[in-house]
Image 1 (tube, each protein chain N blue to C red):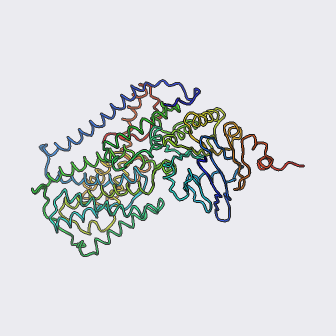
Image 2: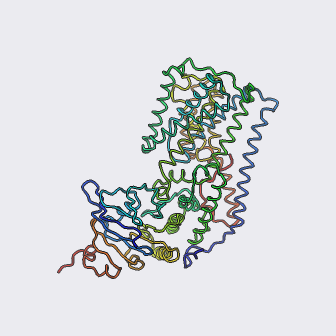
Length: 358
Length: 254
């Protein structure tokens, strides 16, 4: 090994690096423990005495929104690309699974994967086109895409317009499943997608995404191929939202242009990603819960729910632009920073982007 | 043998000729300086070398291979790393992450990394080990978790050097490395540049305004003015060149 730069540049450190790295792996374990507890809770929830079938469906719906917002977060949070048209991918996933179920009898899980794959394919092609557009122009392009998909499902006969397509009952490994079975499919899909995003964002690929977000020039000078990595991000993002879309059709055994024909889904999942906090692994969890449960609680006052969503969005953008997840993570981070400082780390200045527990 | 060579590099911005048939050669193992008054075309030439700027005529050769059609992201894979005039880092990310990005060139198969396959984990460990090693060499090891945006200017400069070094380049292009630095930081960075060249054996091409630094550490100096080659030679030759003096200080009254 080459010797270090001569001379006493830098200050004399007091850091106990072993203690600091020990603490860090402990925090990591805590995050994992929190995630495992959370998913165990999701799994045992249906066996609680007060739990009923409609709650399973409601919870599954929240999970679907979480996944859709996770797809958005890959782009807006991690890669720094604004998309306002992800409802288009949701629709592609939903219709792909619906058509395959209707005409070939494809069951839930293959349908979900097919929906994701179709969205990913179209996402990749669109990525190659849109990523040549700068900033706001790309956002407008994605909006145009959502309108285009809306028009297609309205007018192209195979999608059966506002009449819609009814899906056969959902099956899993040859058995018909209802509320509870479908709920568990959603929980497993959510866990796998979350794990995938966790691995992705800690890998060199996730690093390249974030590098492009923070400084395109420095990223390219370091060898990050801008078009390749952004297209990859676009594809992954479309896949995840497409999976959510497939489930979104399957859960009600019905898709129609009434639902997928305009851009409200695009708005809703973008709001979920932003309100929750798209740079946090658990941000879309909060956002998905919020977007689904606000209309649920204000069922009688649908217009009020709409207004409330808007007000909360504005408030979050003003007071917590990093999302609700950032607000919740702050005390945990502050505590951990104190522990690190106690261990000698020079930390009040720690990097702001370590993910918390999902 | 020249490692990096420019032949007749010409860049026009509309009617302005930023670089007019510039010639430049960087010999392997040397520290070569590129100086010139403001607006001489130094940064444009630098951007041509690192492919952030297209050229209108001429060619750039790296080890006799023409490179003017490559993408900016391919340049570092040849072994050419660069730093920027005004620090260009990932400000919100930690020092460690910044250095790791510099090692992107050694990543290998991106798909293996997305799913944390064993081969990817091995290459990731190598990149991480290398990043820590570089941080230690540059005395940044206690700042690895610090967000770069929270560091003092001199530290940030060092992180930028570390990021470039993580690519394990053969040549480093330094765009005004000491711009905006105080005397102590300048002396420190001068030491680092010398160390990069002598201990790591990396060839250096640097653009600089700070005359004393250029004269102190460069083996060879090119002077350009209004987009053309004005002079070239050892620091002492250049310093006594009359045209250079005129370009910098203006014509003396006879």
